[in-house]
Image (cartoon, rainbow, N blue to C red):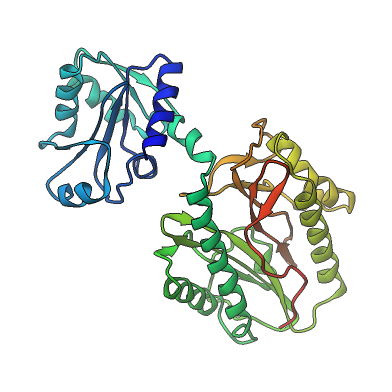
Amino acid sequence: MRQRLDKLREKLENQGLESLLIGSAFNRQYISGFTGSAGWVLVTADRAWFLTDFRYTEQAAAQVHGFELVEHGPDPLASIGDLLREAGVSKLGFEENHTTYGQYAKWGKTLQGIELVPAPGLVEELRMVKDEAELAVMQEAADLADRAFSYIQGLIRPGMKESDIALELEVFLRSGGAASSCFDTIVASGERSALPHGVASDRVIGSGEFVKLDFGALYHGYCSDITRTVAVGQVSDKHREIYDIVLEAQLHALEHIRPGMTGKQADALARDVIAKHGYGERFGHSLGHGLGMEVHEQPSLSARSEMVLVPGMVVTVEPGIYIPGFGGVRIEDDIVLTEDGIRILTSSTKQLITL
């Protein structure tokens, strides 16, 4: 945590900020290590406080190191104002993207004499590049997702509901050490597989159709995110055609993604392959997204992203083709950018499996 705090202070200095207030859950946990649901981090150039109420003081004492611990009063902002005035700080940076207008208005009244300065994305920028400890946990989360995919293949059959499959996946992940799923598990069969975010329904799986599975484990604070599409019974030539195109696009992207390229350039690697085969309009979402403490974070592998990829970033690579009324395919892996290429965290087979 000390290194993260030092890097944050460098960012504050570069932006001319005297202090920063962090209240959003993931950023607070990243900087302090605190996993509870209520608390504030206040950082200046030479001091760092963690404030919480009486419910969490014992937990904070066990989890938070390198911070001065403060049990705040009924209004945490009043306590924060007292600390800032004591430290001689007159400018407070705040998380613009995690602050409502109502909160901002209230803070202005409570923190009179202290200038509120929007400071968006400072901690999120640090979170984009994972350290070795984070990557080790994310590899375990990916391994758990791979095991779940192997397990579920033995259960999928005609006559099962999508919701039954989703439940089995979630129980397996929890039994394997996950705190929860990272998002609502997607199990989309038949024509519903054309829904990119087709959360599991009561639809009964039939024969001769696709089942798209998209799920992930929240494991020791970090997410995995994997998608595989399988065939139940013998599927048509059209099914196999779109599967092979998506697989070609995904493998091409994995082969060529490198640090130094932009998110837009990475997106084009797969998009150009799908467009070449005449299905460009059926690939409507981005190639991928950042992955970490949240299942969707920066950077984005999208046609609009000019952000440059650097070693240590973890992203998904998930092209797809979706044909309304027929079905769809998505294949997704989690990767980490390395100095000279990538390392793939998820290892489940991507050849079309017929169950």
